[in-house]
Amino acid sequence: MDLVVSRSDHGTVSVFAVEGEFRAFTPSFRELQAQVLGALSEGRLDLIVDCGKLEYADSTALGNLVGIHMDVRRQGGRMALCNLLPGLARVIEKANLQRYFHIQPSVTEGLAMMKAESMEAS
Image 1 (cartoon, rainbow, N blue to C red):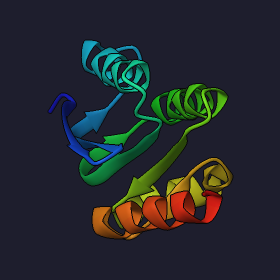
Image 2: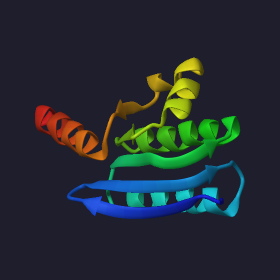
Image 3: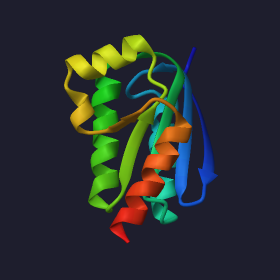
């Protein structure tokens, strides 16, 4: 199954729910990149990727996700990954990618983390 991306906005945070297979250099991966860049251009700098229905992610796609994260950080934003399934969580841990992302067990907890950190920065 190709990657399906849907976006919902929660206050100043955009949540991207991804479902299916996450492979680099596919049209659906470019769609995710375009949606993230669109959110950034709207001034939405806090982003969450909900991975709860992500069946597969190749290593190149994860590397490109780090690249998206770097774009977010360059603009002063934050990015969190939520609802990681056990297999994906192991890959992220083994590749030491958790140093790039806030990892949260759920979107609700990701939103709460973003809100709390925003309040601390104020």
